[in-house]
Image 1 (cartoon, helix red, strand yellow):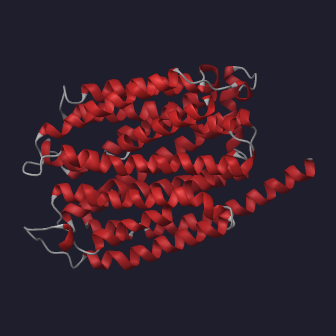
Image 2: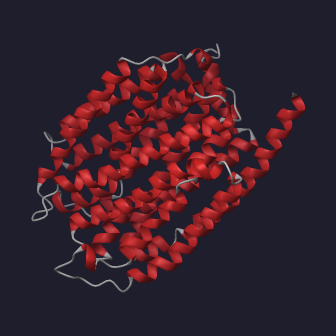
Length: 414
């Protein structure tokens, strides 16, 4: 029962952060309309979220076992809950920056704790991969819910009206409820402690980077998140300005991307039982590229329609977000490959590296796409995602090669 309560609390925590972290695209759109900022200014919001994730993860990940994973999750939820409560009271673009900075700090604590706790709650690579995919799948359910929750609070007659900020009262209440759930759960964290001094634990992260398997994995994670965030962050604006959807529909249509990611990740556990992970992931990357080439020409035919409804929405509004279905299996699969190859006492340090490089990839993708969007247009910006897709395909092939060598080395040592 206690194990189930802990897993439920981890899932709910991840769902809340799924809502907040992936609200950047919606908040960018609302900030442009409500706070009167331009796209170049709005593009830095991703950095306010991702850079604190990277810095805090780097500085604290190796020390997290001393704080305790359950306590770290509670601390992260309390911090972001307080920021959410302040958002409607101090409605401004600077408060939006502060909210995402707090969300980044909190998510650094939460992600290291959740990923490290998976190793404590599972035995073997299959269980680890399964629970990782389930939790990441529910994260995407949170992303999906977030699009509709935010859209529900937006006034369709006056999209820039600050009434939409009331959504943060709801999110603050959810954070408080999950803190109470975590307070009543227990987690045996003894296996996570390696007995190293604080400085030695910090150096463990650098030692991990020196391993070829870890270095190739980090490149894969960076490229994947760069692609995902560039699409996810700018999709609502793409829907509004390129496909000419109304604001509320632009946010809601972006939820198709989240649905695709959620279904893909929840289904990845089943597929990975039957298909070698590297073949599945390389097929997914090729399918992503094919969908970009197929869907974006459809967007060129979109024309403004004052009486736009779902029945009259451009086909591209439904087709392009399906790219998430093929993105979905990649991130949890590569994370599980590297984590399940390491001792449980190294999971916190490894997760810190995962979070750092994921955050850097997210910031880079969002910023570059925002700049390209402003200068070359949304269609061209999304076409250029084909380049990191090609690099990701190469990185997955190298990851397979090094994982095979690592497994052979472990077998020889045994």
